Image (tube, rainbow, N blue to C red):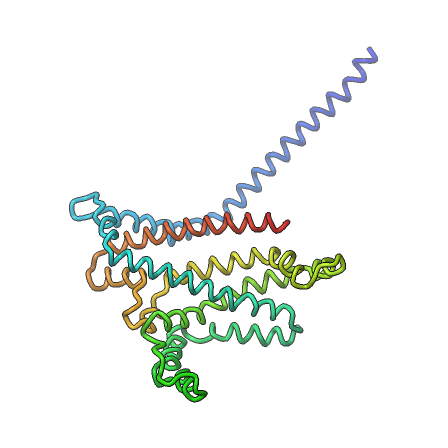
Length: 304
């Protein structure tokens, strides 16, 4: 009898716990449905401006006058398209590497400076954003031409005897794109470096690490997230550049964005333009996946 009396409160407590669990589960599902309802307008907008155009792009690349066809992709095997693709990725990789070489020390300097001087430096970095891309490109065209300020200055100090060809070629395009892309590398790097606790560096110094060793083994691994973000943004934006290569390249530097524009504007060939866009998108996504895996591996190796 006493056992029965002791078991009654236990079973009542279990039933109460079950009711509480069911209530919490219903409350969690209700919150999930509410959050889904809040995000539904954003999902509809993303579907309208991203998914539907991408689907239309894929469809156009596989459709010809007689229905389904692969002729648009077979055309990409032509040497001229392969050369253009090679130029596009060569220029994007080079600009990304130059932005990394220039941007990392600049961001590190901004972190080390007092707040007032760091603000002035960041304003100088952000200043190009306040000017039109077309104006900046034409400014480089004026500076780098044969009788521009750069050639006159180099001749004035006796470094060269004849003006250098700095525009309407690969060199001028690289210089212009690097200048335009540099803020996209500096800003994520600065945000990440600013969040690194200075105590880590002091702790490394107290444990006997030299400043260079502490920088490479502590600071650089902690800045990998900002570094990866900057590399991805600069590389992806460089792949789709059109204005700067068209003006500073002078028609001698042909990128795939220019090839797409020519296919649509000159030849009205939407199938070829769509195939170019699809292949560029697939290659870009593959590279981004590879970079994310590598940076994740680097972060783990850095001891995060």
